[in-house]
Image (tube, rainbow, N blue to C red; front, side, top):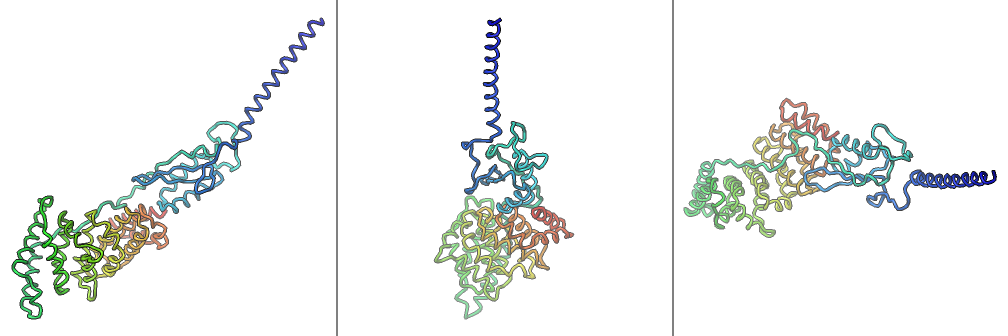
Length: 417
């Protein structure tokens, strides 16, 4: 009996010891979760501030990955709105951002109290920093006319009419004793004819060449001929800048100290600014956008150029309105690519002036609206556009009887949400 009691006591003692060990182990394991992460688990930091999550957001089109910080105590809708405005992105992305935040912060389905801590590893587990590497790829809003890609040009010319007008003006100078010295010689007329012949033969643009003397002659006429007579010369220049070798030779004459292109622009924009000169002048600038070698010059002189032609949108000449609006659209495309905030602001302002003009031609209004929408979608000035009441501009466009105006108005309206 005594021996049995000893065995029984030993048995009880052994299992008490085992139970004590098991209780310690269970307490220790559960305690690791209940007590939360240790000091060695760090929350992600963005701009010097710790957050529960810092998501990667890919907006595509080769743009750099953007960071979206978020705390579970934040309102996901307010977070999305604030972030989209900060990043100059369309509010059309709002629902995508909110859904991604809720799904990847364990808040999908129902709003959770900010103090909630799931001690298990279910779908709602709170793991600070655990989702910082997660990313979302935003799908672009489906828009009909926005954004504009590529440049528009004016590449049709009536070369016979140009040469005829040059000959007419030259004969007028020859008959004026005071201006006879400005007239062209037979050799110079022959050279201009040769230039036009090269420009007409578009199938050989890849091999045909211009001499420095050809460009020098055109630039001389732009400087010396009476203001009312230079528009056919500018028209030749308009086609010349579309020729690969023509623009290359011309750029040799565009220097900081002797910028013949800016001299021409300033001359045609001076009082009185004649409509034929403004028309051909804006088309020269518009065609320059086709060649990437001209983009630096166009960006550098953007403010001067836009100021020089700023009155064109209100001209009664519909062709001039269209030329100016096309130049504005090309500038929008270029400055979006260059991420030029100041330039985009000026172009946005010019485009808004066009669409608000009562007597604006339909195609001109359309191109200005496309410029506005492109700047809002891909540019850096969406907030400025909203401050300028672009929502009202969009609604007015949507009410238009012209289908394409209404469509691009709807595109812009969707970007204001």
